[in-house]
Amino acid sequence: MTALTSPTPPADLRDLLDRLATEAVRDETAELDLLDTGAQLEALNAANDEALAAVRAAAPQIAAAVDAIVARLRKGGRLVYVGAGTAGRMGVLDASEIPPTFGTDPALVVGLIAGGDRALRHSVEDAEDDPGRGAADLEAIGVGAGDAVVGISASGRTPYVVGALAHAREAGALAVAFACNPDSEIARVADLAIETVVGPEVVTGSTRLKGGTAQKLVLNAVSTLAMVKLGKVHGNLMVDVRATNAKLRARAERIVRLATGVDADAAASALASCHGSVKAAILVTLTGVDPEVAIARLEREDGVLRAALHGLEDATR
Image (cartoon, rainbow, N blue to C red):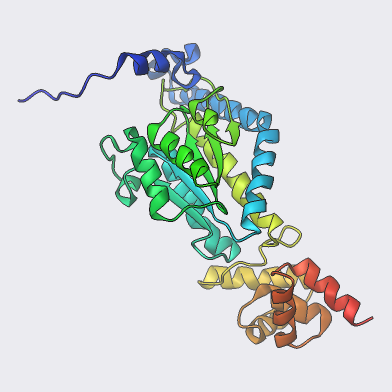
């Protein structure tokens, strides 16, 4: 049998990994394999609590990033996530969930992963090690001054992400670094940084654990709050949901009922008259205007239901 070989990592990378908090050894789990299942689960749960605490501690950084991103989106820009491995998959996952949840064009929030779509399911050798690939992937989708790019890297030093953020800044885009270590390399090439310092993993160096949990929480916050601020949410209701299957059609009907207090039949009728638009159905139900008037008012108010309601109320006084 032929022995498997791999290139020797550079000494500076070895030294860097020795210094990263996410690569440190967690003393409490030094004998993880000897613990019973209940104790192993307790160790994982304790670590997840630390991930949540790290995200809470980074709240001011997350808020600053959200506000800066929304400023770009309001002017027609895009939100682009860039990452490798778990971090890249988290970005692609978050981006893919935005259109059905908030009724957006798929081009509004984009997820790029080192190695392309194949890397979503399979490891792509060395894809993350080339900063030029990160720059090239952003260039391929035409990232420019109106866009916001969030580079995701648990270590904070992934070359693919470093190259992408450097290119983003050169192109005039907003560059946001998101790492799980303090004083990260990607933070130094970005305009803003989010650093959720999660500490050592239960399984040493496996940042799909606490690191991945923190990434999911932060990306949830960034995209959800951005959509709220763009008027995709009314109160706490998903008023731009796309009813593309039976469950979502039922959800759309329920949202109209919750927003207006009408029964299921009235909600279904309003939705049908408005071609499935939840916002327009709510406007029609609450104000009595024709569907065409409701749709036109929403367009005039950039799709913000609350502004459209106020406008119609003022017009009828």
